[in-house]
Image (tube, rainbow, N blue to C red; front, top):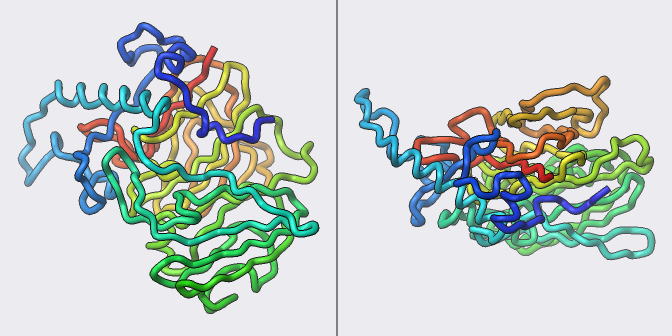
Length: 364
């Protein structure tokens, strides 16, 4: 089983298309390919009033003051096409600066795994040319992925480099009360320049999260979040899979993002025909995002780290804020399959796709 997140895979544009069986096509929309197009906001755009941040319809279509604007259908087509081109380019060479979710490697102190986290003010490029004032862990959004095994003992040293106090809540993890990370409930807030150490033993497996629990509607939405994966001690209790993807949804302060990026800067999910792809869904935002996979289904078998019995099939999974779902996709039909939020104002406008959009690439 591959433990490398497939979002780290970079492929050239021609190889990307060839693997999906569409080399030679002029960026087709045939064969179930692409309902994924562009985010074409000007490079100077910022979060305030931008479609990435608010989900509002960009200029170029829609209605104003009850009067329907004239639609330039050729511009709409060209913008959508450019989005596909940009998305494909992003798979070979990232269109934006900064990458989140880098695996955090522990050091050992006896039988304790020790991790170091910093809380940081971050200038984060969400989409090409769109730079937001974010907040993150270890200078990245989402923060580094922490991966341990059920039964492990951990120590996590947290240094606050922010301009305000904060704390870290270990969402979904069973631990001693004083380690829960809620200011004035279980601990004092970690003031700017101060450090706090969390120590606990992992009692329950599952796809979990860590995030701020202080001024959280701002801090979490600006990027203070990350994945905390607890592998089961007994591997036989978990389905077999070939590759893994963690997909963290967020919204509001940085716009609609998957793993800290907005389309076309999102990473494709890449698998070979016949492989089983594990997707760990996490919603760290404040809105519902029903994520729809074209052409295939997902087998959902775990919610918040607890078994779903029996598992169920779906092609649209609604992950409420704070929830985590684990599912398996049988990658049995080659092609490029759109994968997007079906609240369409979170994903598409006359200027093309933006926000919560990616593509599942199944290679022959």
